[in-house]
Image 1 (cartoon, rainbow, N blue to C red):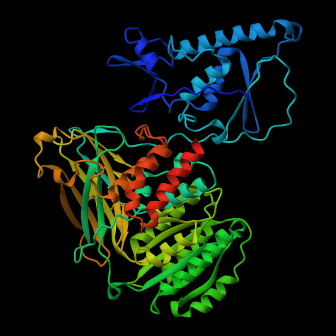
Image 2 (image 1 turned 90 degrees about the vertical axis):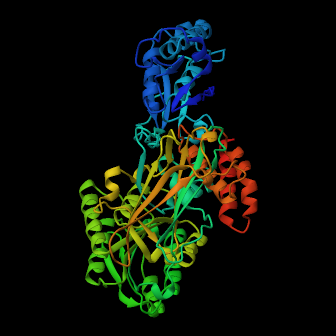
Length: 626
């Protein structure tokens, strides 16, 4: 195993720059070829970015330049010499020739990317590969060792004939590209930012699970808005109105001359007399992969706690699915909790997973027992191992959408550890105008089915959309942190046929923006930076409503530490997510520095364990990448 030298890249708007190369080439003409640098003002920026080339392509290019071959065996990439019958007879010359060849290789690779780049001599073939890896979308974070990315590089330079390998298994899939990240936009060109609101938190729980297992999460499952929405900011709820709009902000703590702004909507908490009867279909994955305490045991605990919180007028039925779907509990009053639990305990987890059959039966039951004026909802609990073909997925999503229009919503809960189809479950919840959460501990189950039961079951608004209009004179540019998958066009904001998000009783949904601010000397405290508009359909009936609130200069604190500690932790949670998903706008601070930044604010809020947990997760990420 060769030790790969790491080269620390400097980032600028998503490009990997190397300071020495840029300074030495300010007056030079860029080289030709696919990896030629781009001239950006007075600096030279490599054209090769972290999204342009995969690790496989990197190593194939190395082999092409060096006259070697690439072998993939059991997830290990091996760069080996081409067969050379005369190699064995030149054993004495091998050492010197290898050193000379290495230097020639480095010079060649270096000239392809940037001439005159110093690769920290003595340079070797391993250094050259490391240099390429820094530009690979599969290894663009110097804090993540290759050993923790599931990738192993073996460099054989001794000319020995490689041993015959057993038939290799299929190569392990490479990590996915870095997910799409919202860029900065010029306000004058695009003043409106529109999106469907959401209160999902599954991404945060999946990250917590990965860190507990000693690994960083897959960047594709890290969603900034779900990290932010996993925390409670103690926003006060309105007494009569459906929503209250909150705006607060402060200078960014991440070393940029920008401000972070949190915009949120807080829903009214329904009184018990206002809560509609619940009419639920509990849809449970009973396939063989669920036969573990952290899966079927979690489902049983969730059902027990749900039944304890329901009222006699609430009704529930249970559908299970594995290879087939079964109605194991016909619709019954929640008052029959003992009989319902007895029927559920007879369920055996076995066989393959047919999510399609389960969804079809659950919605058939929901339609057949639909109760006007009630909260009609399907609650899906699964370990998320199910996969669907494109035809099946399209049919299920169409059925979910049709039933949503009839007033049947979908809540999705994930359980268990290991392989997990996060994207599928997120898509199901979004289409069903519902929420997506992950039950990775008894505390998480209690939060969902006891503490937040009203928010879980009782919707106060559906198709909730947000449109933020920034004023160019005050805010020259901005970017939204997260909500990439929920982005809407400006025209869709007032298109009431567009599916958007739901908000439960007493729930808060937050979104963060990073903005540049015009000269504050020209902005009095009452200056308007923009305006927030919320459009939603009240669950109690009636026409679609729209409310708004200006964003004022006075909403922003003078310094980061002067802001509320809850806001400080919202900003750090977002920065944590940006770093985990390897965003080009991630904070320059490492995980340990972010943890230190969070500690004082978390200490002020020591009664809320969620803030202490955030600090612990940052410490765990720091330990993994140390």
